[in-house]
Image 1 (tube, rainbow, N blue to C red):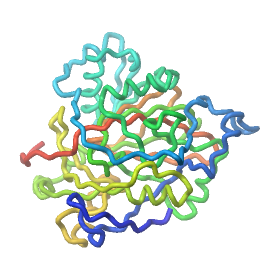
Image 2: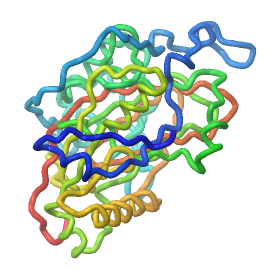
Image 3: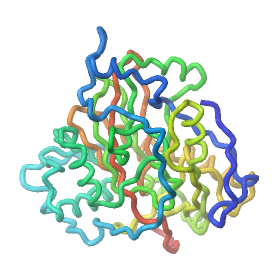
Image 4: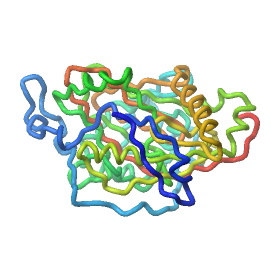
Length: 380
């Protein structure tokens, strides 16, 4: 998708439109009403089976809009949780680190059965590991309302401003590429890769924290999600660079996402916003500092001039994208629920299958605190 030019409102939270860069926002694939084939999803075709979870198929309610989000007081459940994880990692549970710097795979834990103490420990465990793939989960088989209740424990559920959602459940964000969809061929006619590094809805005043993503249908191979450890990305910088970044903030904008949705005939359920967040944010449970910029939504570093902002943002984006040694590629399997902390990671879907197999994933997105920074300490 070609970049669009969006104007920011002149508010106390964001600089004037003339001081915000044109974006490189791109969407590798996005389900919209015009391309959604309900019959094929419900009945299947000669080449593809029907959707396994018809209750999770996307709907778009053009008659309903939502008011601006109001601030709320967030309670961080990972703060003060038992770091030995007795109610989460019990005897017989298998935990395998996926890399030396980020990610774990867990077998033997059923997320839907956790006690409140277990959920508190989950928040801390995920904050430490950054992203955790829980296998053989019953999450997708629960009534959608029950799945949402699990997410609600960790914060107010975010309603995405542009995506389709299951009927009567706007709090569930869907990533849906229908069976027979081969639009990747068109996308790669104009782009050389499908990576779209981002932190979910970073443009909100209170972006997400502990987040749940669960697979409903997926290709036999491909369609993985790659995650970056933004704490390690921060730590890799020299002390001088880390010190320079402290005190700087960046504009995060949802304008391009909304404009793209409108251009494809999809919904904009809430007017897009911009917010300014520190480039280095601190996690409330671990105290770790993390880079908080991303390719999709970060537009401008303040109070730098345009050329200075462009130069520094390019350096930081390249650093995140090239940092293979602090990234992990999570493979989807039936029954997988990925839980990650949006405050200390960035991620991207990978569009590397081209035979029209369905990729259908649901996200429950509890919001967290407004990003804040703590004083530079020399070492992290």
